[in-house]
Structure formats: C-alpha cells, structure tokens
Length: 73
Image (cartoon, rainbow, N blue to C red):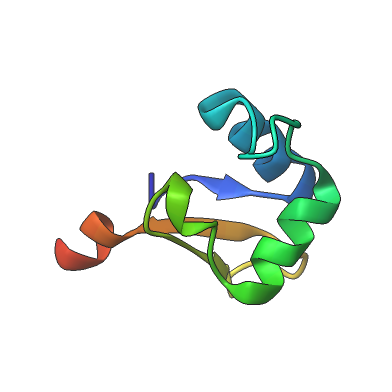
C-alpha cells in the first residue's frame, strides 16, 4: 500500500471501497478525510495507518503508511 498515492478525492473513494462505512454507518466524506489528514492518521479502529503528504508532488498528494510497512523498512 505504501506505493499508492492519493488525492483528497481518491483517498475518500478508497476508504469507502475498502471499509464501506464509518462506525456511525455513514460513508466517508471528504470532510472526514480532511480531518484524518490534519491528524496524520486514519481512526485506530480501521487499522494503524498513517497519512503523510508526499513531498515529491507540488499539489496535495498523500501516501498511506501502515504500521507493517514501517516495520519492513
């Protein structure tokens, strides 16, 4: 997963595809994802996944980093 890059919109779609819904039963929105980006991680109940801005892009492109990905480095 660490090689995948996401914009705000594609990250929202990815979360809706992978996890379907939040604890509340509602789908993820771009507002939810903006909050996750500002915190730097996706909620713990969805896994130990960090969100980092990729410095190699001039626009806001994000990379998801799972705990297991960090341990493999």
